[in-house]
Image (cartoon, rainbow, N blue to C red; front, side):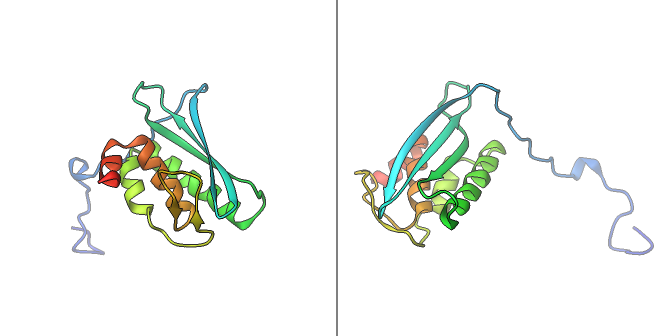
Length: 144
């Protein structure tokens, strides 16, 4: 125990330290899927970069809104970066889709996608689409 803090050990046992997550990097040349969407007349594109593992595994997400420079476009860029980092550190698409589905904020409304006819926000649409496209478990849960 440390003299300054009797409850804190003075030497850390390295075997008990949790391992740090490892970021899975992407190669310089990448394959991707791009999906156009529209929610209450707000158009955008989701581009999902895939790992070259033959498993159709998402690694990076880009979201482009038709009104660049807007607050919505900035927030969607932030969501895309956070989603990309989560995927690269091993968070599953299914976990992200379950967590962010049903988030509510404007714009919301009708979509042109028959699988997702209504979205409570752009984030709701994006994560529902990601789950339906890249997670068998999420798709089965959604369709039941």
